Image (cartoon, rainbow, N blue to C red; front, side, top):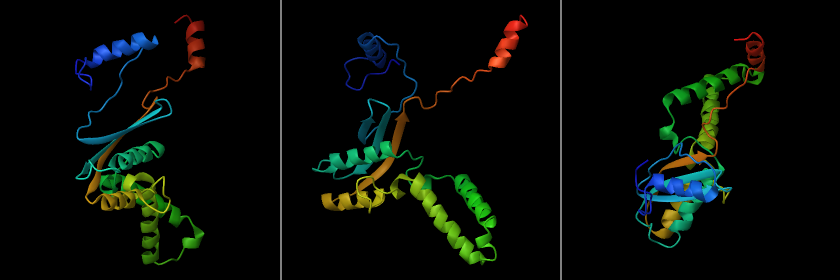
Length: 196
């Protein structure tokens, strides 16, 4: 943790010690990312969720871009999603989802006897719903229900007269990844009573 703090005034370790002294609580850094280039951030609920959204654009200096970028970061904070777009979804995840849908259709009496072409169409439709729930650009945009995030990006790029692309994002949630210790009280009592 000897790296420089983002403002260059001290090291990360020195800043951490300063914050520990300031609030009187033990702090530690469990995870971090280095995001370079054009970014926007969003912190929700007194630090319960933190987001970094990354972009490429030739209109970042125009009025309206900062608000747009903040809106995308807010979207990521509001709706956790594992993937930016369909291309990022691993083939194994799609195949697993496809198998789940096939099993559901096979167990549905209303689907018995339906032609394979019809079933394929249903599977494709259900996969579309999977993408809407799991890919940022396919999600409904939080501030305008009639737009997807991709449509909001395209609309803003057109309004600002250039190009905009979301290139990635990072989302951190307080407590995420902390393994909770599970207690086996019966085993603990047995251990205490048996003298071991």
